[in-house]
Length: 222
Figure 1 (cartoon, rainbow, N blue to C red):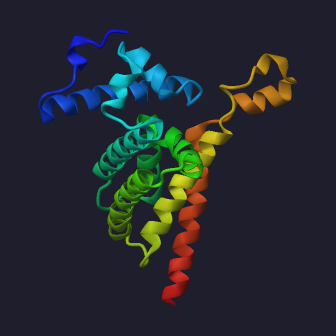
Figure 2 (figure 1 turned 30 degrees about the vertical axis):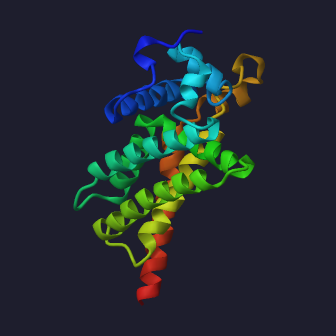
């Protein structure tokens, strides 16, 4: 395959950044469409219309491409989420801001379990460690802001953010309606699968989490 004219070896940092951005954009679209079923360097290259060797000019391997993409979507997620927070918001409004941001950025909620598998399976932990650390720093900064905004106890902001991310990923895993052929099920079971709502499932769990954290915080202060 011929290398696209706009993907020849870049001669400047700006050109290099533009190529990397185009690769990451194609990788994210492929990941969202296939849910990691067809995510490979060859498929990303095919989508862009370039050779695999062109991708390797910018990313050492599939793992580096994935972790770089995860860092990017995580940064966008937390920046957008923080922009939706404001003084005096209720716990319900806070929970809605989180899940609505997750819905807006599906790459973040889909990639987290993918990245955990990449970390487990990779032979080179260095750059993966750096990517995960960077996401952790974004989450920690968001947690400290949340703690102050919602007037939570010391350390509770981090507990909330960690719990919300885990709850979000759990709700995604439970959303099996898109994967099952409900017409082949018993009607009662099919109705239950069709009635599942990812957003409401998250919010019901988030409400219980916030009640528990506030009770714990009040108990510690008494």
